[in-house]
Length: 186
Image 1 (cartoon, rainbow, N blue to C red):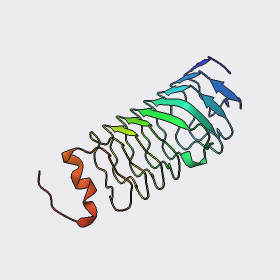
Image 2 (spheres, helix red, strand yellow):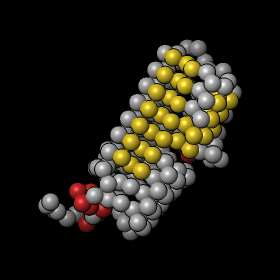
Image 3 (cartoon, rainbow, N blue to C red):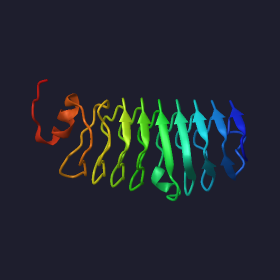
Image 4 (tube, helix red, strand yellow):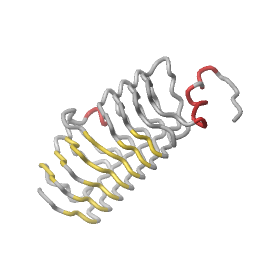
């Protein structure tokens, strides 16, 4: 399907036909718990959608923007690795996993990422603009040249992650020292 707009569709009752979706816009659609395995989305946008607990085995997400959407419990590591390029603006991504994904230059803006797993993820030059990263897991994560200056509630161990030339605010420095159990007053 090319250049199609879907508005207020409930795909939990009327299943989205399996296939390739190029330049499509999904607005206020319900995908909660749907199986989107082997679907292909190129240059598409999901705005105000509920995509919680969607199954994503070999799902292609190439230049896909999520805006004001819920993606609770997503397993991005199950998506097709080739061409994976996503951005998030004002989204809820709690309990999602980006384990071993390559998300260079990805943009996360005004989003909540509680308990998200970024283990072994490549976030080189990624931008986290005003994101809540409470209990997010950063382990063997590449954050080189990433920008976390306006984000908060993160705990990142500099000894177990690559953070060369990453940008942090002074207010975020305690999140880099949390393992030392220091009391820092700013």
